[in-house]
Amino acid sequence: MLNKLRSVLGDADVLTSQAQMASYSTDWTGEFQSHPVAVVRPRTAEQVVDILRIASEFDVAVVTQGGNTSLVGGSVGGDWPHLIVSTRQLREVLTVDPATNQLTVSAGYTLAEVQECARAHGLEYPIDLAARDSATIGGTVATNAGGIRVVAHGMTRVHVVGVEIILSDGEVIDHLHPLVKDNSGPDISKLAVGSEGTLGIITAVRLQLSRPRTAAWTALIPVANLDVAIDISRAIGQQLLAAEVVLTRTANEVAAAHGLPMLSAETRWWLLVEGDAELPSSLLPDATIVALQPSDVERLWKYRELHTNVISHHRDVLKLDVSVDVDQLPTFIARVEEAATRHGVHEDAMYFFGHVMDGNIHISLIGAGIQRRALSDAVMDIVVEAGGAISAEHGVGQLKGKYLPLVRTGRELTLFNDVRQAFDPAGIMNPHVLQQ
Ligand SMILES: Cc1cc2nc3c(=O)[nH]c(=O)nc-3n(C[C@H](O)[C@H](O)[C@H](O)COP(=O)(O)OP(=O)(O)OC[C@H]3O[C@@H](n4cnc5c(N)ncnc54)[C@H](O)[C@@H]3O)c2cc1C
Image 1 (cartoon, protein in one colour):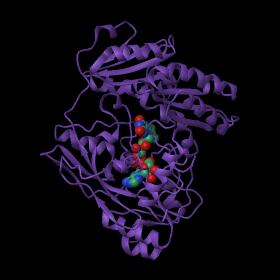
Image 2 (cartoon, rainbow, N blue to C red):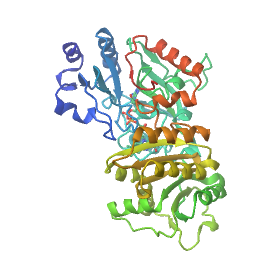
Image 3 (tube, helix red, strand yellow):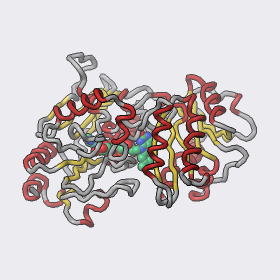
Image 4 (tube, rainbow, N blue to C red):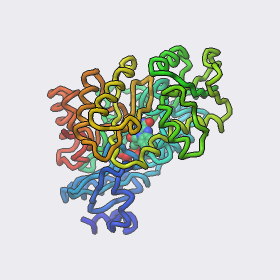
């Protein structure tokens, strides 16, 4: 198999030594380790076709990897025989069609590069998240990424108008055409969004760009509790571009680690909000920090965006990304705190931050002695009782498959498995992802 792969890709793009494969074999959280037969790095869609044909011939599983920023173990394999197909070198196309304001881009470009290309054409690609410089556009489509602008613009699925996806037998499904209207049956492109590498390898995508909505002001506001944060965000109305919450304690951990001014500890939470019209006068009590200049805006966002980084320096972290109805968020967090305390997590070792108006909270619970599996189960029970989602935006990966039956009916799971089998009869595409 390796000789065939080398004949397609050349020696330099078939990595087999531990040292060469190291950065591809561990996921971003350090929780999941892969022991691949090889890491292959195609540069063209044709090479992806050949790789998939070879993997099918030798019946070896394929784990597709973009920027490897998955937080649920989706981008790496395990102890079983597999190839990691890194899509980062897929950079054949990056063009904007002025007739439709649609951008066609190969899967390996980063989210930041796509945003920059849109800006250069006076347009906007509004999906944005802290891993923008590493996450690939293919990975964001494969995970239906959310991020910090969902409250104003929706998730990735809204913006994808077409994909090129290559199936495990090497067949290319090409929906990158410029037709604005095409109702010729169900839309395979939308099925590829959020498929987490289980249906095929996305080699290029076509995205609808939009007229830019630029932040006119950014404010960091101390809030006593989440109900206040929600009320303030709602009062901002249609101009709201982002609404993020952080705990004062953890924001100050970020501040200490990155040389930022400490935030007042008089309130438990801080709310970061942005709008694209006039700053509402109600947001100007003395303690509010408002930024209008880009460098100040960047500084305020660091309190929020560096959370994942700071948490990654801790060991024994249980990380969960979930969502509930916005109005249930305060009660939900209180219940998670109770459960975590019962499982021996100290109050100072609980992190809650996230996209408040999406009802999406990122939970990190830290402790050497905690029974992570039992605690994770307890949190998911609370999510389900609240009618929430076991994954808000990071996907299911290898981490959360066992919770799928809590939120999907047996019939739904059977339908998804049937779809998966129809796309990938050999069952080689990311076989341990999205599995119960
Ligand atoms: C600091 C930090 C902040 C983050 N913030 C957010 C956030 O706000 N919102 C959010 O939604 N996520 C966030 N994430 C998670 C992550 O960045 C996203 O899930 C992102 O979309 C993954 O892109 P990637 O290129 O790194 O994909 P990878 O991590 O490499 O892969 C993710 C999944 O997609 C599949 N995949 C990747 N590329 C392809 C392809 N071309 N074809 C088919 N399948 C593919 C993989 O097999 C895997 O299942 C964050 C992560 C970090 C580290």
